Length: 391
Ligand SMILES: Cc1cc2nc3c(=O)[nH]c(=O)nc-3n(C[C@H](O)[C@H](O)[C@H](O)COP(=O)(O)OP(=O)(O)OC[C@H]3O[C@@H](n4cnc5c(N)ncnc54)[C@H](O)[C@@H]3O)c2cc1C
Image 1 (cartoon, rainbow, N blue to C red):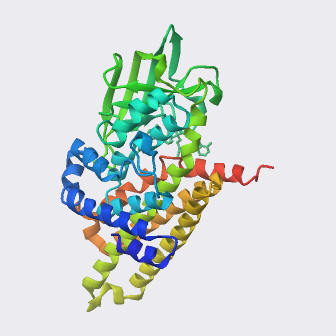
Image 2 (cartoon, protein in one colour):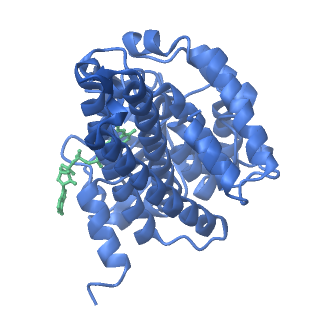
């Protein structure tokens, strides 16, 4: 599930037996541990902590990370990660991806530039689901222009003193670790560093935010009031924040594109099932030309997105990813999702507006794919620059 993706994999020979086995493992996990509970977790506005441990045990959290830090890397490629995203999407709740997999960019940054001591202390418990980690970059004054961020970390002896605030932080109400972007130097990107803040540090507070969608994933504003952070918690060199984060941008955006397309597939499947069952004017909806054309156009957008996504996955695997192309893919996939969620709502009619349907939830979550991880406007601009259009 989504069945569409099962069929897709069967048609593409670059999906191997290993991907099928992994799909089967995640499918079983979703069916047993997630599907029966997701509505309750949405109502609770939180994923249970046991879920992280169970996902860690199955390998969902460690997939693709180095074995020496508790990951699973042997025989694993980026298509395995795509499979995870697709199978988790079956329950039609984007907060599940966001809440459960939020650690990936932060851990990626520690892996890319962090000290060996930090890697050994932080990564294994996160991949085991024993500790939670959030990435804290966006500030109340803005998220797109990261280079202008204002939170300061001033060195005093062997500590940094952190002051400022972060907002829209996924997992921020109860994370144990925060990979936090702070200003240690002058203006611009070269003045920004990554610092590991930890739960319980004096002067670190949060308030919970309520969102349009992604309900089972908690989101917070963080406040830093003279938080003392040991210098060993500096991730990489001073001024190295972009170095640490940039390596993960392509993987993160490709992941969002993939899960967006998975949600488009869920919309198509839900709409098709309804269109076959629901009768109007004496025949099933699907027998009305306008309705079946909506289904055909949803399918068209899903195919184009998946072909492009698989192409970018292959490039990423070969170390040949083009950041501009992946940025455009993210825009394309989220616009396709916007279209599919809208049309699925039209096909379900009033039923789509009632809480409890996957389509209703996905429709509310469209913008949570289009804005974080690089918003549409910023992605288009980045692509134009990376394709060399500015000369
Ligand atoms: C559900 C959710 C979860 C999130 N999780 C995290 C998280 O875990 N960690 C984290 O650090 N952040 C997180 N974010 C924040 C997210 O990364 C930011 O919302 C995003 O980067 C945009 O920043 P902003 O909201 O401050 O918008 P702004 O930067 O204020 O921009 C506002 C709008 O203007 C557009 N815009 C900005 N500049 C330009 C320009 N030059 N030209 C044209 N248009 C422009 C943007 O595209 C945006 O649509 C999350 C956000 C959401 C909604």
